[in-house]
Length: 559
Image (cartoon, rainbow, N blue to C red):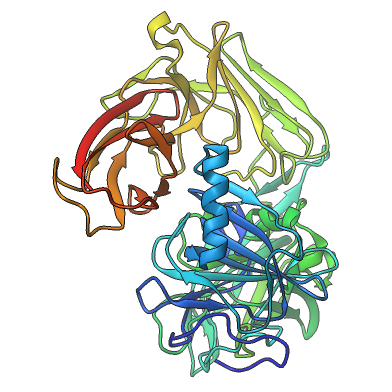
């Protein structure tokens, strides 16, 4: 595992293996820390990595689930996420606050004197809470000066066993042009297979140079491995030289919270959504922060004259210092013809620094605020057919498309409104849905008012109006009237057909009790915090979906 002079390892009794690292590009955010494997189980002891105090305590259904935030003397914040439970005194404080607030979720900020800790002190147990798909500890550090998330492994705070070089998986090329009005145009991806030529060196599968246009850039699909696990990891650095001169470098040492979402423009987002690899653009797009590019010549664009031959050398490095290289030749296409598509003369140009409102008669309105787009583009509202939906979902409008590319990333919400004839009984159940990039119908949010269904959305696709008519389903994971006196948990299975579980309330003998939701398991759990009475008890669970459909059932058990 390695030992840092300032910090000790945060978890006891594990093999020191990992399932994710810092900077992984996930839809909508960079991964802010590392995921430490807990050998497939919950309940591993967590300890304070340094002297400090518990500065924040969170319990929520999604995100980090149960999480502790430890602040050290220099202001560094250490985050322990997806925990099973806290140590007893912290757990008791959380329990009291949940009852006092009648709230399943809490976000507490204790004073610096309430929970001081010394390095090595026990603070709780690892788990699988929040948006977690398996037992592990999400562990991250935030710099004291500005709370920027830092690369724990590259900083040497934790040093995994890693002798495996990162891998080049595939190469893509895009020819680009910029119209007089500032709208960038690009060709479809040209994709090229790669071959390993021994250990950490790669070449093109084809022997001849790649034909390229007058101006363009490359996209590299890359990945990394570590000893002892089958998981894939992100890379730390990707740099490029052309004719032996540096022209590009991507590197992820740290990032502030407000830049986390920009992974969608650092990556080639349409490709990133469907690839198992990291799809990194070797160019800075309009909305990509300069922070991630220590070296950048002409934003990474490569100019090649007809018949001109040039040499590209790429180097890939992981956060443990292992490196790989890819070298290949390019040659300028022997033609002055540009392969970039012509502009759509019926479309409207949108710009990142300007707001705009677009309409399709009275049926469809889209308001795009300044800062919502990463780059300028053309849009044109169009109506079309809706995808197949669940039997409990009623479709109430055509589908409307604004962006030609349904995998366009957004930095801020846009507001979509669709006018539709919604029968009065369905108005409270109406919402927006979309056909996502996989072609499936998905709930997008919003609500009905004055003949329109509107919502603030950050997902692009073909939007349409639906009414979700089915309430959630729930069932106890225990037999009615059974004796549960030996159990410490009361479990329920819950699910919803379309809009998802929005809220829930559990009462025992008519009194509210805190109930935790575990989305990946589809369960609600009361961690029993009352003494057994040996009598018949009554549990009433009420679950509500995203548009207010509600299911309430009562169950009896002995405890």
